[in-house]
Length: 345
Image 1: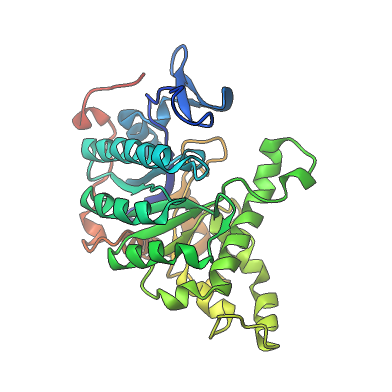
Image 2: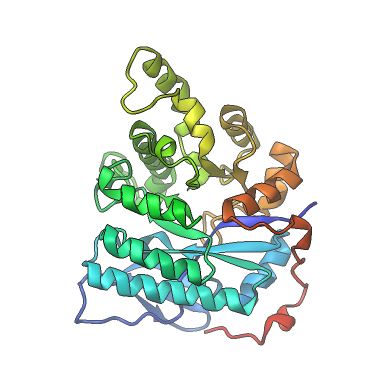
């Protein structure tokens, strides 16, 4: 198998202290026995995690098992905190970006980074993009809406314009999805079904607003294979043919080929359907490491479904904006000792 670049992985810092001076929704990390920890929000456990969320050596070991040569690190989506006051959100973004930058520095040939910004204050977010670029990040992660503001809203256009100018990608991840209350099931189970619908809503907003046409060099990655988007494109095309065009000057299915998509679909037939709908030149390997929904051995899965491993790696480098040849990627050593001593906990 060729080089495998996992573009969809998340991190949580090992130390993020509670702060009573900040908004009550300020997230924190509480360490417990062994390698266990919990992300706390508003005084409640949001998610139980372990040292895989921040331990470079443990991640490298898992990458060997998964056959992955590079991980792209991004914040756990809930930490994007698009609902915090701007001062808190800007500070948290800096903390998260510094954490990712430090992990990248520990293993620069095996980690790339996608950071975060205070997206609820676009002027601040644009300023933060300059620092993110200087830190060597490939882009930023945002939710499928910014605390209720649709991604196609013109108030976000300055952020898109700045990201395009700086050659930074945007990774769109489901966050606080619509319709959870209508599923009437446990939040964990509901999320598995509703997240793809939420991603589709965000992508439709971007398409209807003509974002991809207005910013043609902007790279936007839709998580989880774009969710339900590929399945509804024929219906959208038909509506477009009837004159329901909005700001779209071309059929939605054509514009949708400008998005990037990860491979976290779990089923080869679904991944093949995605490739048939939007092409394979913008599909990149993803896993959702280190969470329970993780797609293990993501490179092998994607290769079985698409039968084009070289293209997958080249696609990832193109999304990351890295010009070096995929052949220059190093294999992860079977022992992570070369990258530094173990630093769990």
